[in-house]
Length: 141
Image (cartoon, rainbow, N blue to C red; front, side, top):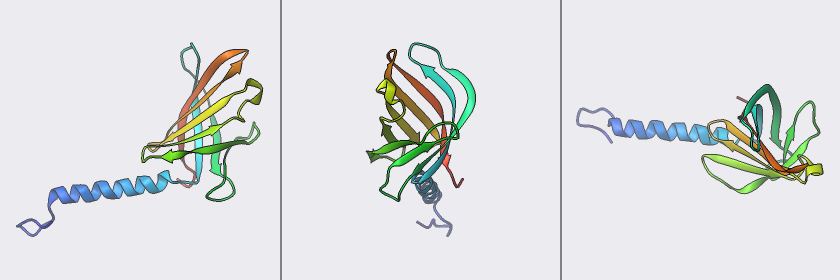
């Protein structure tokens, strides 16, 4: 909308700027490959503690409909399945392959602002869970 003075309406400029920012965030949030760094661990019943950053790659394997894979230099590849919903705020993935000996199930949530939470629930001598906190950013960033 044009103002009487011939300039662009400031409200329209704000809406346009927000739209461009949302589009850029949406495009990066649709990434097919992430670099993740986890820096905190929170076991059931204990306070969270920091640890040396643990870097992993998380990427879609075998094209746009393939499974996702979490990989690091120290551990075997772990397959994840993307849950059938996605919002502009988060993407969620599930795996039963993180710790089969503990009958564990894992949920990895990647948020549009780069935050990441990896929760693992299983029987580790007794039923319990551990949550890893960190970030996941598109790999091409």
